[in-house]
Image (cartoon, rainbow, N blue to C red; front, side, top):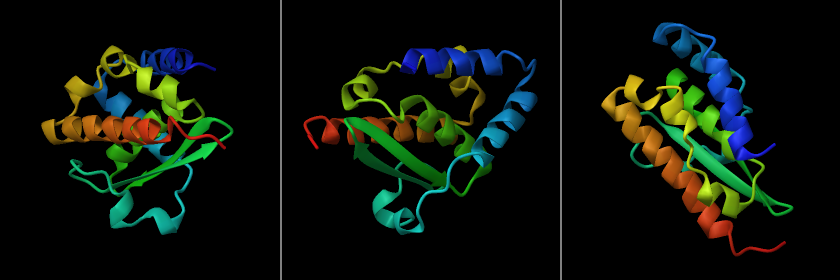
Length: 140
């Protein structure tokens, strides 16, 4: 499934909810399904700078694709990072670097976050794309 197809799927899921309280609850539920990151990655080295809450992100390069794992100590932030992992994990570095992530605006996520969470969202995306850039020249 392409990044765009996954984004469209997420937009469809969020369109089922009428108000942002229901969307927040859904975001929290999504966060609960995030696969656990290995405890060895819950260190300062894997913390995303610019997030108010703690967010750890790790990337593996497998068969030409990047596989992300992540976690957060805040429930809404955990939902946000799990959406980003869902969209970008399992794709090539080139696909990740080119992804416009329009689903964020299409579901109204950024405008319904506090300024600090919105900054954190930008930092998460930036870090995921930096991993993709760092792994883009890598061959297995």
